[in-house]
Image: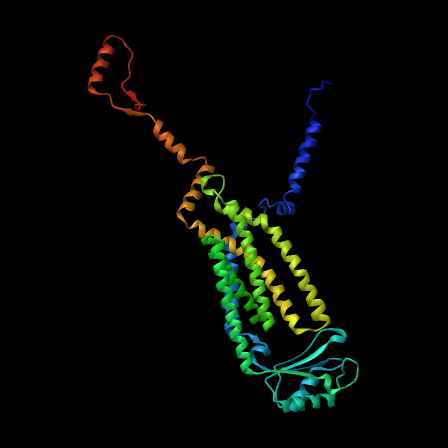
Length: 400
């Protein structure tokens, strides 16, 4: 067999290996390699529709249901005791009989030996608190940490309405300061359209998260507000990272017909997708651990509020930065005339039509003109002499 003869078996094997390699690169590997496996920007209308629906639901929930403000904002009294074998309904009935006040919330938090029964009500006088403590002790005998029945096992805390009003004002002030600082930062750090898109996405995050709290009646506490500011910062940070990649990819995009701004922005989202997901997962792990250990086992209310808002915010913030913010950026950019023109040039180039080619054709095209009368006489003379001639002549522009 001639050594130069082709080997079809080997060729087929090589082709199969190439196809297998391409097949492997079409799935999750394409996401890790940032090869544009998902068309985020092409589905912008879908993201906008989902966003509008979420906004409508959130605003409706806030307007109709309102917020379940914690004791620190509304003022009131909270009594707590080791849950042990206590029954919530029985303890609540005892509380109502002793004070004449129906509590706003009676619940057991925590798990195991750390279970705690909490009673939240409007602000009570010291006399009412003492009466409730004595009645609950006589009827249910809650036990302290040493396992002994004692009135001291029943704790209480009271917040005045004026203090709650002060906390509310400071909460609103902190939110305003945060939004102003965020607006200044993105205005300096990013391009104009990027800054607008980032701030719209940030406001969207805030409204949707607060809408979730209103819809499900989750308690709004100072710890929750601190957590909200934290997750909004995280969301803004993730948006800036994506936009940095968009800026890098779209540098000089108007000077090339290889791709459009939207395509380069979509590639940037794909290139940062796995990084955003990985960051979110890593951020969520300690939050979940906090909820399991500090909340479920210890029943610590403040940590519960902080963990809950952070878990909701981390997930929602990544979704908005990937799906909403970049789509808004592309929409705003494509409204500008240079990018509209560039998109058309890219489309024409891919269709085999180029404005440069058209201009070249127009410059070199031949023009056919009528033969002048003098030339006609010459033509007749030539015909008389048997010379070959044509009825028309071709004119070309004078070349310098």
